[in-house]
Length: 344
Length: 273
Image (cartoon, rainbow over all chains, first blue to last red; front, top):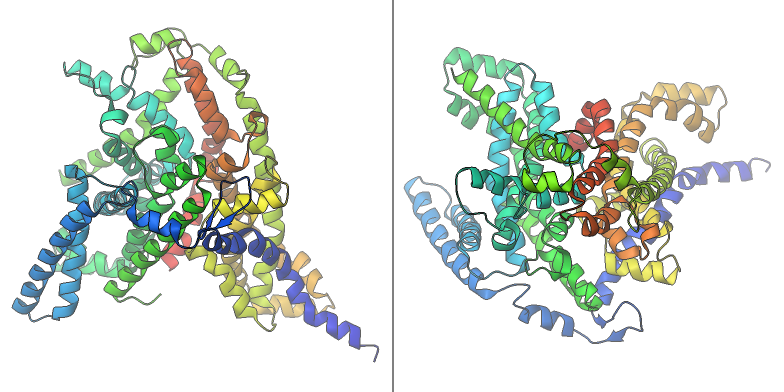
């Protein structure tokens, strides 16, 4: 009988270890994340009482041309259909599965359409702008990072120092980087870009006012390429070097090494970085907020648009935006996992 | 030839990465007038007083932001370093019912959600914590849990079971085993978590923007935005650059010392999948 309390205590000890972390996590992470869904059905100004308004926040979201505009989607889905068509034709020529190639072509065409349309200046809302930034980072950051990683992996002198340098922006505060780029690089009078233009006798450009999206994209790529370089280097290290050696003996060109050895081996990592690029843009806030001048700016991505709505007192509507973004990024991840047929 | 080209490419890319930061440093030693007349040139005589001016800038003192950030980071990381290894240890080495459920609850945070700021504000309002350090510390600690617990969990899983068994034979209780035997073994992982969380929390901006109302409470990133509003002009541009440079110095120093560990920590799970 004497052993009873002791045995009982033994049983609950593992729970005692978990409970502090669990309490913090449930109260300050899970609960707010669920509460967002509830508040999205209310009207709230952040001060007074909440007022239940049903789905009116979502109705507003659907109609909000600042959040998303149908024009870009229309053009992109045409591109998507064209992509699907090409995919099916290619599949039939090469005896592959129609459906998979069709879907793949559609997604590629859709993404290409959003990217191309966004760059060409089709009126875009916050959602499209977020996607444009995310998709362009897939097509620019990842290939550049892979090239640099391959070079650094090839036993180049000082590879460690180079990797350390390119990774540097990742650890610096985005606010500090945004301010540095805004005033040191893009500024109309003292920015380095305009100083360089002046040397060539060209007219200065007000980068952040006239080309806000391009400026933000340049800075984003500048920051994050280093992250993917380091990720790819780590992934390349996991490939047995014997494979590289035998490829060298067989006389494979470096393109073939890339196509048949490197990419198949690090496929999973590439998939994860693609997801990071796109879903990361939905979380990006600091850079655009600080660079383009907070809520007064015309140029928003989903996260800054959400905070802008908060600043204007539409807190329920902000939650509706958060809910929409949650499902969109969930869908993106799901589609990609499905396409690449990789089980996580 | 191709090797030289590759080398050149990498060196050029590194130069592009370093350029804005180097320019920031150069300009932090110039007067505003100098920057306006020749933005890219070296300072004629380095003006170190920019740094003390920025440090003590009225209404947006970098010093105040620095201290606030240090307090928030210090308390958050201390709590994380105590509770995350405990949970990670329990989830990886102890046997109890519902263990995998607990694990999945924590891991859900890796994939979904983020700072749900509206709801977080409402919660802090009800707890009467708006404009206090706690309004930042609690969410930071909670947000750090999935990653930190996963790191500790996977590290504890690599430690041989025999060590734990011999401790039990010696009559140590579960808690003593954890505290005296297992935690010292897991120090490398704990250290990585501490450094990464210091970096992430030091840089966090959005939550502070929503929760903090008065400048005397502002963390460094917030203080920088306020500071920049008063200093990005003809007179004080050098002070502005100095202020920004002060704010990034601690992290650059930490990174210079622990660059390998930081890189590995930030990319770890991705590559392991």
